[in-house]
Image (tube, rainbow, N blue to C red; front, side, top):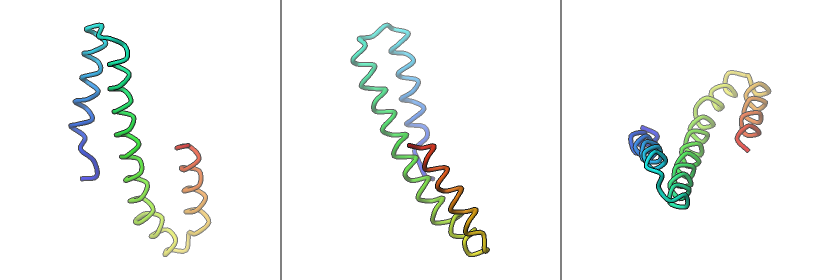
Length: 79
């Protein structure tokens, strides 16, 4: 698989529990930051996989302009 989903979901549930338990805000913020970092890592892996598979396939099939435009639009949305 591309990403350990269960770890991410467990972390999000942990944040939910921390909020419900009214834990110390900086502790919650640290956990939120860790989840954001994990999601950023996932996005990098997913984007790389997309380029190596879907974009390359589109280019090989003669759809260069569409593939590049879509990739550029995706990267803009990620930034």
